Length: 322
Ligand code: AHG
Ligand code: MN
Ligand code: MN
Image 1: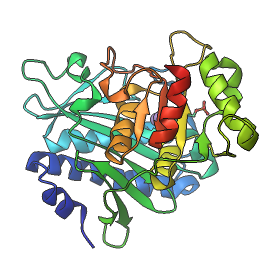
Image 2 (image 1 turned 45 degrees about the horizontal axis):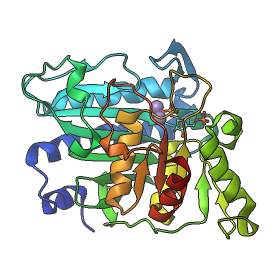
Image 3 (image 1 turned 135 degrees about the vertical axis):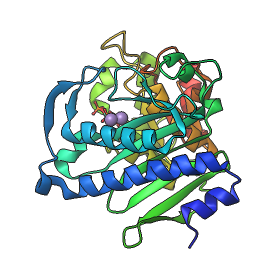
Image 4 (image 1 turned 60 degrees about the horizontal axis):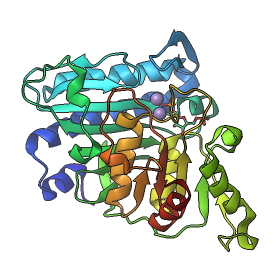
């Protein structure tokens, strides 16, 4: 079986980026282990602190963030880091080539129920002349991504990643400690009859998303002429993994609860890396108006409405929103 390193070499990934990804995976393997220990080591539950998003941090959010910071700083290839769990960017090595954005633990409320969680990351080149502690280095559209992916801590620990040569799936062989290629160049089926959205927010959605989902719910008798199924993991990483594995449409649309939060998901370390993976697998990812990878960030913690997945279904949704 092909190891992660061999695949990266085959894809002509520059050596420094390979070394950076290796370091990142050292961190993710440690998170996988810590998550797996669960209640045995007292890592479950919340801290008394809030992150910059105003969300209570779980102990595992803080632990995972620290693990990733440590390995990335030590690697020497990273100029700076932006993380869901850090208010500001973290300056690393001024000589480092790359900027890394990450959600150290996505879906962390699922730790309480032993369900799917993961780490989402995105890697771009640093810009010459921008200091390591300057957040403006991160304000690049997703089209500039050099590598993006997630590690899913499920029944198996999996890495799903793209360096711009398709989206590949690796499974962690816990006996050897290697990520082994288990599926290359995955393709999302263009058509689907499965959608994924937090229905409890329905009353807060904008009218066009209400209309789209209402038509899905009418099923065969409605304008779409077929019945749809619904799935919701409540961790983007789990929902997107299902979409990448067997197709589907995932939505976290704009809602009107809080005008300062247009949607829940964060552009840099949630929507954009997932959009990169989805596009590399033949799918589509949009805010409802714009291709996610074309959105020019204005803030490292910026949120965007997100619609992604099977190409024809995303297009069907955009017919309502555009
Ligand atoms: P995080 O745990 O990193 O804060 O992200 C959780 C996100 C995302 O993974 C998921 O799709 C969404 O929050 C679920 O939130 P709701 O249950 O509020 O819809
Ligand atoms: Mn998240
Ligand atoms: Mn998180």
